[in-house]
Length: 408
Image 1 (cartoon, rainbow, N blue to C red):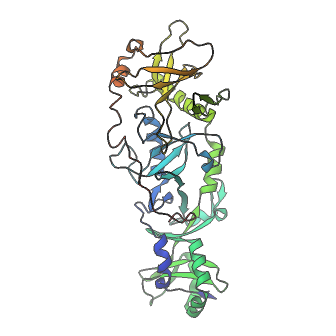
Image 2: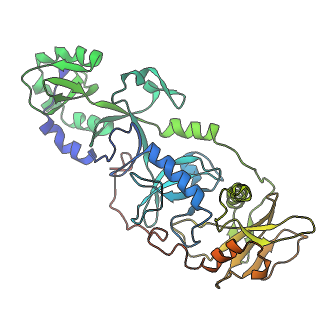
Image 3: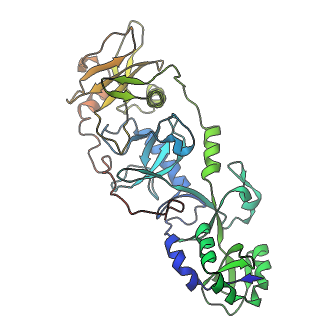
């Protein structure tokens, strides 16, 4: 026997979990509180952020490091963040967003987070089977659809969280028992064809449960037809496993160790991740594909051994901006040289902090050391670069407390 519930009974709980979707046709998406971000838009944001890491000002909130990699299943790694919007992630936008894509040093998407004034919240990675009943026969990120955790049900701007549905049933068993109806013999057709024919039903949502209160689905009226809402499954674990298995590994730089100098601490994972991204950017710059990028910046040219020295900014975590501007130096072969602190001035003079033994000391950066006049002109204006609204994103305001499980 199956039980039906009037949507009016269900509405009290559903209002807590129903959110608007700017792109409801996107089956795979990230849910950041009340924001739906399609996976395709997150991918676009990663491509944009990876490219702009070589442009944005070191104080910009757009580009930042992300030390909490264990949130995505890996320890001792530092990732990077870039703002992501619900649509049009193909250029820097004037408006701000509290949501960030998280990428590794090879520019692979790890996930999406929401930034508050003092904490990172991981956004839920979800997928529905709307319009694709064959999905249940396929694997998603090498995991069978039926093996993915059942998060709930979805129809456009409506999300019904399974844990809340079960809690609702648990608290309303007596009410549920009063609504047994014979017409739900049609339920077999619902699950076989997705449609049930009926002429006398109002446009409400109905929760389908068995006599043992097992949840079978939610149905809605569409014209003269009944249609079942799409199932919603969680991709957090499946995508995380696929990301860790197939993400590209750049140079490991295992020889690097943490640096603790005069109270300044840089972990080995911080140095490795920045060096990996810097080397990838240098390769693109030498090929001419990113010739106008400020970074990697030519720091010193050595005609004797043809080993130039390049500079790349050490991006700070977004919620920790109390440390000065530091730059990592490396050579053409991506060997670590030193860390320097960049001080004020139109041409970025720098003072030495720490370096690899046996190398000449760098104490000041002169403009005569630059052979690339185009780079020099960019550097002369670098103090003002990134001060526009789209580059200097203010820290988001503290948000209200939310359910840690459902993020609503």
